[in-house]
Amino acid sequence: MLEQILARQGGAIARWQALACGLTDGVLRARVRGGRWQRVFAGVYAAFSGPLPRATLLWAVVLRAGRGAVLSHRTAAEIDGLADDIRDPIHVTAPDDRHLWPIPGVRVHYSIRLDDARHPARLPPRTTIEETVIDLAVSARGLDEAMGWPGRACQRRLTTPDRLLVALAKRKKARWRSELTAVLSDVEDGASTLLEIRFVRDVERAHGLPPSAKQVRLLRGGRVTYEDARSEAYGVVIELDGLAAHPFAERHRDMRRDNATVRAGRAPLRYGWGDVTEHPCLVAAEIADVYRRRGWTGAPRPCGPSCRVSAA
Image (cartoon, rainbow, N blue to C red; front, top):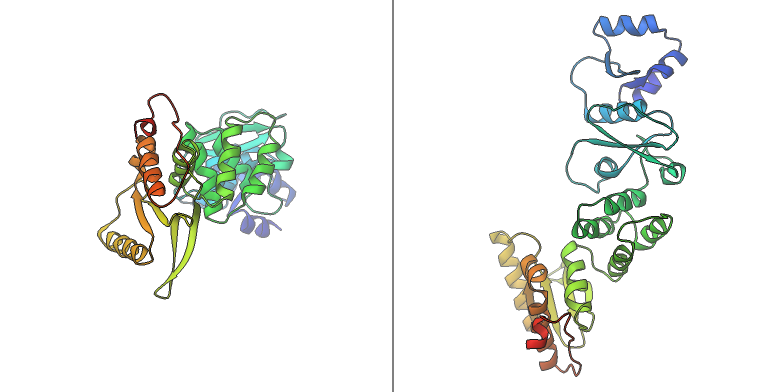
């Protein structure tokens, strides 16, 4: 039984588990003194010497936080593939009726609805991906960061907008509820990256432009590619280039893609992060001009008194 617990928990074990397996406090002290085991936190041990692997440390944090505790926020995102890097502190959520002394290197959260937020099967114990996304969104430092988490989770096929909306609805108090609801609607319509979400919100919707289809799947030269946004009615393809300039090889790929778009009879437009985030009104004015030259009989609307659309 002891070996099974250690195998499941990455070599970490709580004092109460060791005692339940027949060990005594004297045995635990002897193993630590002899260097066979090491104390990680109060009442939590690793059954080996040497550096702690990340998996062992995460288990040790959960065990130190006590029964019912789960990894959450950025740490849950890390182990579920939502976040791409490892960051400290480690985040753990405990039942709200528990008070823990500070744990070195750990940020402790408390929740009254932990039973609902816990994933029913995954180990180490953690929040569901939907709860993780909402936790990260409502605790984000700014709205851009908050909007990025739902798009990333859905782009990586870890969840769906509908499931995220259900998780959001369960929160009695949720920062940026209306904005997150709108973002999830955009993700449902095909926007996946933060840049695409900003394009929908700040360029198309804010200026009354006809909505474009997002992430349009194409087969070119035997390879599947995607157009970020396409207005089929007016024959316009809009590519959004992300936060950084493309490397040399990718620029050639983009050039070939633009050329193929022209050969197909559609007008290519390309915008970067700075265009969409710093000059959304100018981008909207340009797109509206192309749409009108291609048959659009509507008119864009200014998003405010100083909007460039009004000047255009």
